[in-house]
Image: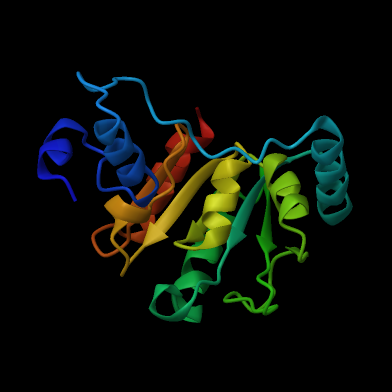
Length: 198
């Protein structure tokens, strides 16, 4: 860690950015570059996106916009069934009339909402990203799928309770991390409201 760079760049601590800033310094790039580090991009082609759209339509059978949730994460990052049940109930109540809510399942085929929502399961990361690319919003705990969602170009909300959010949050221009230790479920919905009106 370079303390001087940490004072120059507010996002220096992010796992995906620290090495880039350090490399720039090692290459003698001074004064600092003020351009943003590029966001993650799966570079899905039009055929992949169209296939993702078809997969999504087969699940929801309507033209409403879709919110994807991913309720699983590893070890301590995984929120409880009770926590997700409360959030999912609130999502359905507030957004269910105007939005589809579907759950992306992990390879373990586990659902923290007991499979109450329509689900999508695939082992193909590009296929998962293509489906998410056709959604309006992705909500999930700190996980690889959260970063995959960000790389699809869909607005992504990452939920953090144990991980260092500054280091691991999704960093796309349309993404945000939420520290759920100091944000109520109602506060999370307020952020979702903002995202859905962008």
